[in-house]
Length: 180
Image 1 (cartoon, one colour):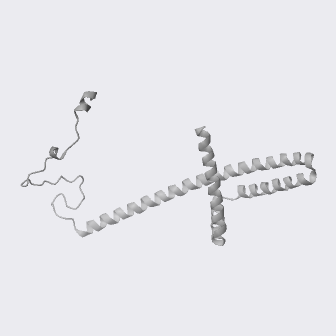
Image 2 (spheres, one colour; image 1 turned 135 degrees about the horizontal axis):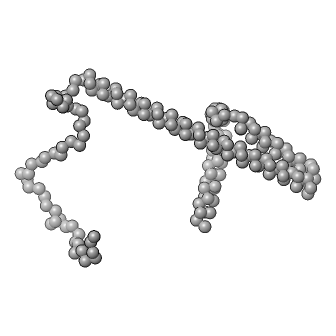
Image 3 (tube, one colour; image 1 turned 90 degrees about the vertical axis):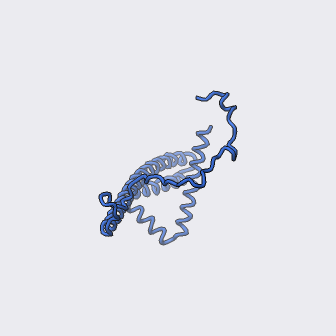
């Protein structure tokens, strides 16, 4: 480990510190790091064109298999995340339904049954949506989303912007809470 006195003896590198090679010095390239397969090791000759095309075909097939495997893994992972998100959404909607039903009884007591019925109707609508969402598979939801985007791309962009805004607000609120 260097002590503090060593640092005081160091000086910046100057042009006088750099030695240039002599003009008659010969250049020796470094040995290759890896055998590239460009020569037959037994004969020292280049391989025939058949083995090169076979090697290229094998490499292409390996890349295709790897890409297919990665795509399948990504699809499975996305499906698992979507299933988890669907479960969380239906749970949250179930809690919202319960909250609306509880609020309906309070509204009945304070404002009258007519206004309480509005809250019960809203709770019924949320419960109906929750049941539909719970009964629909993730693949069907993706298909429905694709159809919605095809039919009305403007609505899809608006929904995406609204969801992005909500997500940004949630993330910023979470970051603010952790910082406090």
